[in-house]
Image (cartoon, rainbow, N blue to C red; front, side, top):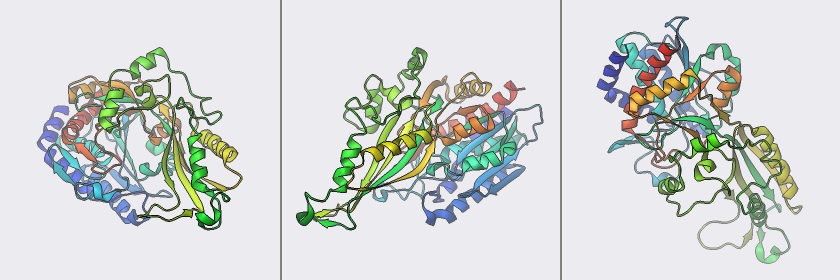
Length: 459
């Protein structure tokens, strides 16, 4: 059955690519209200595709925000395991548009890359599973295990309604393992299994110093400047060792064991690789830790944008009435995102100048997670990667956040496997996002191997 599926998939790579191109043409940007019709179109495209390839049930299910696509094929029998496959069909905004080589929703194939918003994150990786599932159902008419799919439309805005959906449909989503392909591997030939993701707390701080913008000649030196105050506050959030100065921020951070440090510092992520990928002339991180540990195992605080005043051409001597900043903190397992958001809020309230009116808005918060590397689901991933990519995978912690990992582990009590096919230079969230087509095709093969190995090993 597996060999037939592999032969079918390899003979139909072109059709799989055509499906990916069709999905990439849908501008399903979850954060923009004007894209709501495109969100709906992407969800229905997926439900129709899953029905067409042979799933028994495929439905677009409502949430308080964007819909979830659920599908299942459960005819392998009660003795076979059930695998829950997760993906997301929503994408990031495309700004700055002028830096794209081609329109972001008109996919371009150039060399061995396909360009377009969502090409890697996550439409391309999701489509590896659609093609792998289709290969089984079009050849044997069945799958080697029971399969459920959960495809959400809010991952790029913090999965704000996914937790409620999972709680309300916990019985429907019950599975022996959950498989997520929304991570990356360091090189095209070295697969990795991600063993941990960081949590996230994202907040916005605003300072108002006057009812309206002021003439700096008339009021400068007397009325405090919100931009100056914001810069002072933001600068104080790190010390000279690059440690976050918020009281209590590190209280729950677990020390790294010697084994964990050895696993993290396996040569995949180094100062040199980060500089090569980013073009940064040098790095700056928390004293006492390596570049790999900064990325995967230490919490951070980053400033994403500051707004206020005049930034147009020429000059305008104005003291802005308002300044605001967007700030996020990446959190390691055991830190609680809601608690960190509250500690941040209390600290900002303490250090905000009395000359300003302060407002703090919380955008999102989710906890990080570590997975059990001894599960049968992880072992199957190792074997599948070796067959699909010709190399044993290494373990690595991911610097980003995947709220669904914690939700699956805490609500469904389901072992999670993070088996991604993206590359560090795929420019996710940036102009010219792309997916390495050899990884797309080998990802399809790897998924085919995984379904059979996990289905057999779990019997």
